Amino acid sequence: MKINFEEIKFDKRGLVPVITQSFYTGKVLMQAYANKEAIEKSIETGYATYFSRSRNKLWVKGESSGNKQKIIDIRVDCDGDSILYLVKDYGVACHTGEESCFYRNIDFKKTEKPDPYEIFHALYEKIKDRKEQKPEGSYVARLFEKGSDKIIQKVGEEAIEAVIALKNNDKDEIIYEVSDLIFHLIIALVNSGVKLEDIQNELLRRYK
Image 1 (spheres, one colour):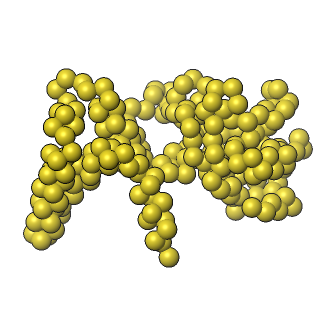
Image 2: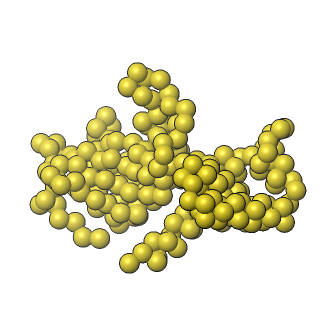
């Protein structure tokens, strides 16, 4: 990864704003600053490095907490006055314990639902939690208790219903049945130990 520092507009302190985004979910995780050395170190080590204005030194995200951010790509905006770290995040980004520093709306109330672009990953984590915690009355937990054969059977049933909906060409029916299919497919992936990012990587490999 080559760096064209001449195209990056650093301020008088030699800093540029950095937005950090999850490569797999698209979730914006945090905003910080970097200087040339921080960007170079991010590329050299493969982990997100920033410049702390309060401590006046470089800091590697997760160096004390363990919540590291593995660099997948670094991008520059059209004007060159900010950069984007695309990362695979390990743990939370925010010092408050939240996954993202942007966990509140403009009225400072915490957002309760995932955004549309991250719904599949959010569902995956919730389903994984149901499998591990086995809460009473949970449909997902009961399905896991019934075992792999039952889960696979449900995927097959939902696939047939989705095909019928597509054949009927009824938009509302298609939306409902395809959502059911995706939901049960994610259950099957959790059961098989396959991560959504594994599927994303395979689809990226096929993209031409």
